[in-house]
Image 1 (cartoon, rainbow, N blue to C red):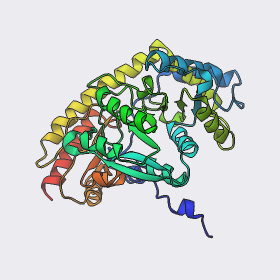
Image 2 (tube, one colour):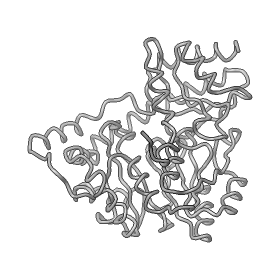
Image 3 (cartoon, rainbow, N blue to C red):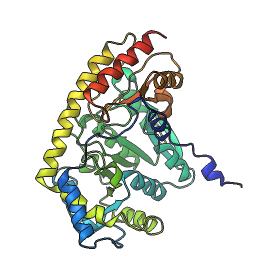
Image 4 (cartoon, helix red, strand yellow):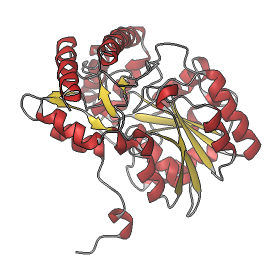
Length: 380
């Protein structure tokens, strides 16, 4: 059977591959990008109630109006993004599907998308599937993978139609403060460039207040999800919003011919995310993860030769181990009972790094894992 050239050019997801390898018996899995918390009970009960009430049929393709109203209100009050109402919000099967629809909507054959290097593994394949080209903008381990003047100069000189900000970031955990993002906005305004702001880890900002470029720049599409903040990764619910309704309507047309609509009863469950009880549970989880971050940093700082500035958010460390084969190192670690992901899967700058998730392991597992990591690295 001859497959399309389109699909032949797309590699498998490295995160899924290494997560599968890390599920072997006796392996502490630090590869998976999810919280090890259950979804708050109030959200599960709301979904169960929706099932009992027969809310199991098709929903409007953009999402149920009640949920889109809540999202629009959240973006207005919390993120201070103007010009957003329910019609300018699209709910879909996770932020990943929102991003896929978004690249299909904004990118034509030959269009350039500027991505940070390193970046989440699915951005580049999505751009490729849309017929676009990636302009990689290098970040630096010594700067904690936060955009610096070299990054801004590269963006200034890029021919990109679209650029992407992901703060806090997967895979590095980097938190880009407002002043850094404002400099990116200034460049984009001068060049007429679109911004995709991937804010999935928004609530996992430990060392500063998260900020949305959509507050000041209308050519921003804000992307978020319930997956991380409320430990709902399996629910597959994300959303995108933009003051330019034509972008959302175009994405919705694609959704009508693909997904149809996000799962109906899951959307009714997600309404409970906007309650005080659910938000309190989320804040408890985030506080725990900040403590885990600090414990993991102490452990990684004790490994000789490693460069790892304390990340300001998400639930990842992205330490650089120097001139090493990161794939071989990840393989060696799995053999010794620790699952991670090689940094090279996230871009050229990721070579010599590992993505280590502290979101899916207990304190005891993390302590054991870093003892094993140190043993493998210092005995190489």
